[in-house]
Image (cartoon, rainbow, N blue to C red):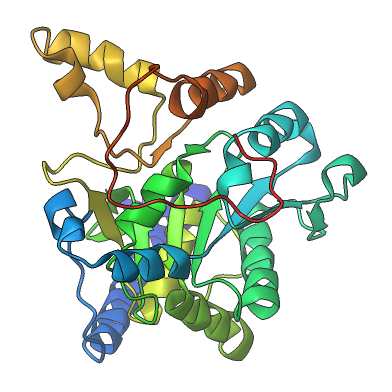
Amino acid sequence: MISECSPFLKGVMLGSTVFALITMLGHIRLGHRNRMHHHEHHHLQAPNKEEVLKMSEAEREELSNSIRVYCIILVTPQDVSLWAAVKETWAKHCDKAEFFSSEYVEVFESVTVNETDTWLMMKQASIYAFNTYKDQYNWFFLAYPTTFAVIENLKYFLLRKDPSQPFYLGHTELSGSHEYVSVDGGVVLSIESMKKFNRLLTVSPSECPEEERGIWRMSEDLLLAHCLRYEGVLAENAEDEEGKNLFNTKTIGMFIKEAITDYPKDIVEGCCSDMAITFSRLTPDEMHVMMYGVYRLRAFGHFFNDALVFLPPNGSDND
């Protein structure tokens, strides 16, 4: 039957067979390497309030001051309206936020990476961030300009997590037998994971795919997971005490619509976590609406008895 097929079809079938074999061998190789590491994959939960209240005030203050988040936001010149919205809203709550663009845009003081391929931009941004700030920040948050992040909730989630361990956190999804963190919901890497990723990029670059190419194009989030998996760093899903996702790949409006259908008698509980860290696919206007709801709207006379306070960065124009 194959002999009667066109040369093109033969090539496709042969290519598929070779690709499957390479993938299988790669998984065997990665699996062998992963057994050398002890940081196992699991679903991670935020600390509960009672646990935090048991800490002394001095311990809480020390912990809150020790969590320093550097935000990497990947943009293109075509994203200028989203770019402006992120800069005017949640990015002000990062300890430091920088925009990485394929071209320099003076008004936003972007870091130019001279790449248009998103995966190559991500790798260049990671190398720059690690080499420049490895002694100043212990957590790195990677996001697109369509993402809205509540950085204080991120810091609370990271409260009892050791950045010297290789964490790779966010909203996990499955590809074949492997999980990866969706960049749509934002990716969090500890300083140890950044160290491993950068060592791979600079010392063993052949083990990390160069770019998205070929018939079977892998997205940048899958490529990132592939590289980190080689170093024994596995994707971990961030959840609250009820198992609700903290990093979300949709807008809050989408979740509410789904909850109206799926949980008509308990829409709020059926929607989202009270400690949600990110929402995605936002327009610039939706970004400002989120900023209003999260940071600016106040109930007069009502005080939240939060166990921790995360102060804004010094000199920041903070809401």
